[in-house]
Image 1 (cartoon, rainbow, N blue to C red):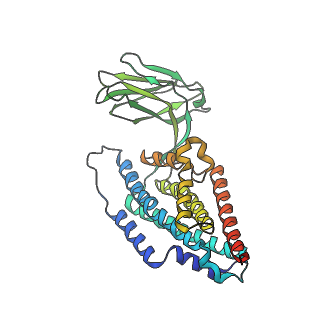
Image 2: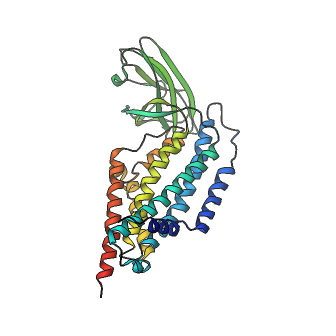
Image 3: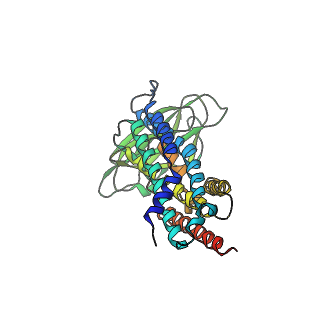
Length: 347
């Protein structure tokens, strides 16, 4: 049923050598152009490395993504597959599916490699393990916000790293100075930072059997700070920043692979360009429906992207994401096989 030569032919149709050469040149340029940011303070170099990674991934998603979908649609064009009439429709569809997925995997791996070359070093980083509800609202001078978080209780005593998301009200001033403090029966930690927009305050505190008391205060005059809802996160250590590219690569593989196979299947029933356009449109649905899009392939790509931009390693894709990708793969396979059968039954 499976034909290796058909799979290789589908791969070459999606990534002919001129297209592969141009994509490699673009990724190489993005990886080697580098750049520095001398205004970054100590400990903020991770933001520059994250920005370099996202530059490469953004280039790949904007340029390589639509190109791969269009080329995958050409593979599914029934007029190009008339010479395969003697072969099993299911076998042809399966072979084309394998070739298209192999091409998508090649593009994703090349992008991940270029992103790591652009970033350079990859020291340890952090991942947001859990998110907690916070008393969201504006902070006025001499009116700190205090609350407790029982979910952070540890037995035995352990050190946890917390990150609090804040911002300032538009038009209220250029910046504000905020102090984030965590107090337990065995430890007391605080951090103070000047905030001009959306920012994060991070600290480490030892937690034991009592829930920590958290406090956020506005220090001195300045803009009106705002504590964001669900703005408190517990961070866990990650061995390497390369997990940022690994997490993005898995999401890109799921999203681009599912979209490419949908373009493959739809192009048997419409023009390849229209099939690719429909696949692109369906890929953007998760961005429009927000949290409800987690059942779509890479439905949490926007959240993962923002976490990488903040210097964190995103969580690995969930089972619901992979289930959505498998459904899209099955739909693409079914559409492609049925278009081949319908073409053969025409007089």
